Image 1 (spheres, rainbow, N blue to C red):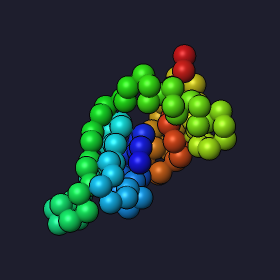
Image 2 (image 1 turned 180 degrees about the vertical axis):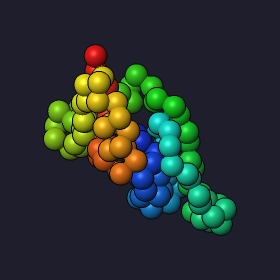
Image 3 (image 1 turned 120 degrees about the vertical axis):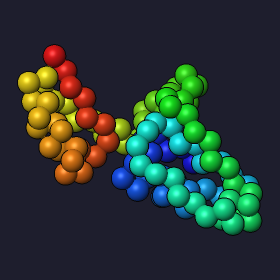
Image 4 (image 1 turned 30 degrees about the horizontal axis):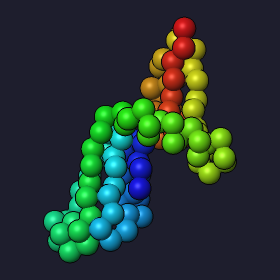
Length: 102
């Protein structure tokens, strides 16, 4: 399982979707990984953290997106709307990534 955000419950959902002896790759930042030790050792699952992932991870993600197997969610804000972007972030919006552009 690849979790490219690591926040708002994605870190919990990605662990739940990881199979026995599988690996949960948390790529990004935010949120909290809170897994009872017994759940890790009894199912022999791994949690692997990475700030941005590898180039190959990005290529694979783009292929999945091109095939319609994942949805890329992005909200763009003009630089002058930084306060609106922060308000939306605090309120749980946008889903996905928010980007400020000049």
